[in-house]
Length: 388
Image 1 (cartoon, one colour):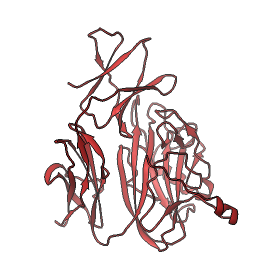
Image 2: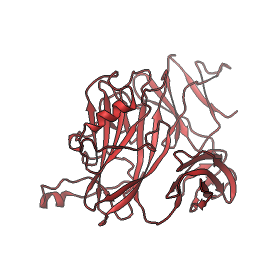
Image 3: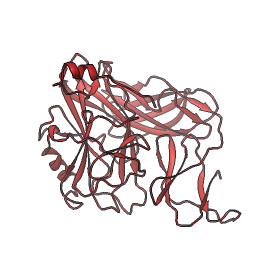
Image 4: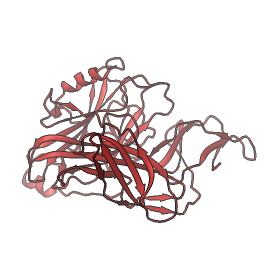
C-alpha cells in the first residue's frame, strides 16, 4: 500500500483556529485512501445512536434517524481494533490488522461512519465519482439483516434533514462500489459530507461491512464515459485465477448491456447492469502476458460506448501459501491469495488420515486474499489446500 504523509504543523502554528484534515478534493479528485494508519477525526469520524436491536428494523426508520443528525454532532475519532473478523462495537473502527474501516454495531440503534471532504479544486464542482472496495463479512450468520449492509447518504451542508440516500452505494454485496453524484454546484472551499449508516440487528443476522481504497474523482471529460474501475491498471493475476471485472458508465442514460473483452476477445457480459450504470463480470486468466481489458456498453436508446484500455498482468501459477492466524481467542483465519483460485480448503484432526473434509465456511474475498474463518474445536487440527 502506498503511504501518504501530510505536514500540517506549520499551518496549525500560524492559523491555530483553522480546522485541518478534511479529505482534500483537488482539480482531478482526491488521493486513494488506503488506510495504512488511523484516519484523523476531521476526515473520518463516527457516532452511535442510542437504542437497541429492535429500534431500527426498516430502511425508512434508519432514514428518519439519519435525518435527525447534523454533521457537527459526528465528531468521535475511530477507535482501533486488531480483530478480524470484526467484533461488535457501537462505533465504526479502524482495523489495524487489515488496514481498513469497519462497522459491526451493537448496544445501539445504529452506527454512523462519516467522511468529510473539502473542495480544494479552486472551482465549483457539479459532479463527483466515488469509488471504494466494499467488504461484507457474514460468517456464521443464520439469516439476513432487516436493513442489509450499509445505507449511504450525502449532504452538502451537513444540516439535519438534508441527507440524501445514495442507492448505488447502499448495497450488501462485496466488490467495487462506485457512483457519480450530481451535486449541481459544490462550491469551491466548501465541505461535503458522505455518511454510512449500519443498523444494529440481532447477533445472528448482523454481519460486518468494511471500506478500503477510497477515492473521489472529479469529472474531467464532457459527455458519456464508460470506465473500468476494477481491476486497477497493472494488477497481477495468475493463470487459472478468476479476474473480477467492474465498469461504470456516466452520462450514458440507462446501460442495458455491458460486455468485457481481453485483447479484443469477449470474456464476460452483464445483461442487467446494476442501477443501469454498473456492469459486473469475471473471467479466468488465460495465457501468460499483459492482456488489455476493455468494455463496451449499450444503453436503452441503442447507443454504444467503449471504455479506455486497462492493462493487467497474468503470470505463471504457483502453489499458494496457506496462511493461518489466530485473530481472537476462538476464531482462526485461513487465507491464500485471490490470484490462486480453484483450490478447496480441507481439514483433518490427524495427519496420515484419509479423512480430509472440506471446510464448509464462507469464502470472504477481500484485500487480495481468500479468507475463511473457523472455530477450531479439536486440540489438533490440520489444514491443506487441494486443487481438484
